[in-house]
Image (cartoon, rainbow, N blue to C red; front, top):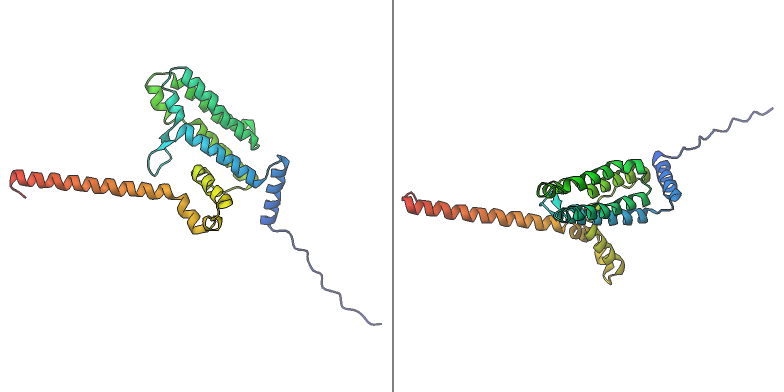
Length: 225
């Protein structure tokens, strides 16, 4: 009787962790009736709002600045209540993206502190520059989106207005192919960095000119020139 060799057994390949993760992220998005594009668009909307409220005017090369919230705090009580009401819009956007209410608690607490502190004339307005509930909300939301939906991109948060403008150009402009070029897109999104660098160069040149002039004047007046 002829014996047949046993056929080799092929082990089924287990799906990679990456595939499982992507599928898991997609299912979580589907649970909330969202797509990746909708999440990024809503987070960008939140970033635009946070920038307007808390960092409309920035210190170069930092995220520190002041916005509409600090300006409103100059109006006693009414301005602080208006700021709190406006800040609640950030909470609404966060909830739309599926962020649990308990995760939003620190931002809500900070908004209430911001309102109470803002009532104090002068000092309240100054502290409002550093108490930024809308930016806090944005940070909480992005951390949630990163862990729950696997969204790691940050450019739509860091440059929300430019990001929106670039997307419109890519989709609506006759030269969309030009704006979709990765190098062109990168340069466009980093325009603020180039402007800040020019400001620093200009200020440095101005300081050098003034110092040189003062040294020359000192030399002429003392005879050490």
